[in-house]
Amino acid sequence: MNINKLPNKDGFFGAYGGQYIDEDLKKEFNKIADEFNKLKEDKNFINELNYLLKYYAGRPSPVYFAKNLSKKYGAEIYLKREDLNHTGAHKINHSLGEALLAKKMGKKKIIAETGAGQHGVATATAAALLGLECDIYMGEIDIIKEKPNVDKMRILGANIISVKSGQKTLKEAVDEAFIAYKNEYKTALYAIGSIVGPHPFPMIVEYFQSIIGKEARSQFLELTNTLPDYVVACVGGGSNSIGIFNGFIDDINTNLIGVEPLGKGEKLGQNAASLTYGKDGVIHGFKCKVLQDEKGSIKDAYSIASGLDYPGVGPKHCYLKDIKRAQYKTIDDKKAIDAFFELSKTEGIIPALESSHAVAYAIELAKKHKNKKILVNLSGRGDKDVEFVLNYKISQ
Image (cartoon, rainbow, N blue to C red):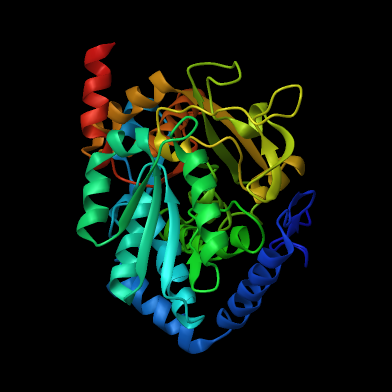
């Protein structure tokens, strides 16, 4: 199978990606692409990034055999422990990379959006470390829901801008961050939080997140002398999943499964499962599968996990679905919450609600496929979700 590892010169993975933006921004984004392509070949840049990933972020994150969960459900379940990274999720991988890129380009500020707050915390952390100003746009609902992460961002010195339009969640935070960036692109870099947005951002974030898959593949071989039968990861925008998928993309006998949020159901507005229910469209300057009505109007997405609450998805995932290299499944709110408690009580690991979707699907797989090896990307820890989950349980 011939799989495009990189987008073409116009930023497309197959039919998806590109730059649907005005000419001034295209010029700036092309400058960013040129600078990034130079830096990723620069030994000094790579050495600096690797130093920070190892001694600051705590990489490599381990692959852990979930013995208790495996015994209970019949398959061998392994967890790639991105929850153990500094700041508590995979987001630190690309946040450090983007902050270094901003410094090399002479930018003074980072502008970012966040849903669950993990990208916001990681960006604020990287900005503090490298002496950059930091503006973070976050939906008003998510600010209330993810208070622990909001408090951390403020302690780290970030300026939090509450977004009160629309659903007051991730999509609107991206909208407002883009508007701000258009006014400040000469002195700021938009540090986007996933493999979405106009080219070159999907390519940049994918590059920095691919360390997950590189580590996981060698670690899994060391542990088991073989490769996993399944690699499972949650998909919102798609950064943690593309990061781990890239380590196994050429291993055709390893099934890649992205897990989208079914939320409250299959109807438009009840979920954020863009690959499952979306149609080709343009959102935030790039082409992908988008949740939209018959007239092509983008509709509100919903997920109990703020980090998955987005009506589009990364173009690389759309491409992988088209060529049938990856499969995309769904998990609803209830199953995600159940998996949140199951992993906590069985293994003593409290997962993020986003990651809980992947854990839930892995449990379903294990029940059907005894003795198979399943690797789950545990993309983040659940500290931020504890109060919300307990209140949710009480209200049911």
